[in-house]
Image (cartoon, rainbow, N blue to C red; front, side, top):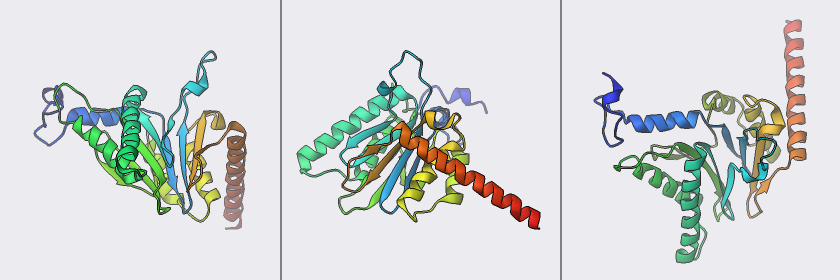
Length: 250
C-alpha cells in the first residue's frame, strides 16, 4: 500500500505500524555529516566531520561540538537549524536544574530530557520531528563516563562507542571490530581512525573534543589533529606491511 496516504501527518500510523514522518527525519540524519563518540575508562572522545567552509566564511562560527555544562558535551548529525533549537532548550534546562537543585545535572538526565522533547514532536499536530540525532557525553559526579545517543523518534540509549550521520552503519561496524578501552590514547586514536574511514581530505575536515573527569573540555587544534592523523596513517601502513609479509610466508 502506498505510503502517501499516511505521511501527511505525523500523528497517523500506517497499517503496518510506521510513522513515516519520523522515518523521513531518520533519513535526514543519515544524510548529515558523520559524528563519532568513544567512551574509555578515564576519557570520552567526540569526533565530527566538518563541512568545507567557503573562503570568506569564518570557520569559528560553525561548531558541531557544543558544551552544555561544565562536564557535558553534545554533538549531532542532521539538520543544523533543528540542532540550534534543541541545543538552546538543553542549555536552558542545565541552568534551570542547577538553579533548582543546586547541583549539576547527570548526563543521563540531560539525555532523557532531550529525547523527551524529540518524542513530543512526534505526536503533536502542527509540528514536525527534529531531523537530528545527538551524541551526549560527560562524567557524572562519581567519575563514571557516559555516552548517550538520542534519535528523532525520542529514544535514547547508552553506548561504549557510537556513530551517527552518513555511513554510520559502516563506521559502527568498524568501532565494533576495533573498540578497546586499554588507554586514553587508544580511545582518541580509535575515534580518529573511525572518522578517517569515510572522511576525505583527512585532518582538514575533522574536529575532535576530549573530555576527562573534573577537567575542562578540550577541543584539539589543527596541529594536534595533524599529529594524530599522521600516527594513525603510519600504523595503517605498518599493519598493511605485516599482512603482506604474512601472506608471502604462507
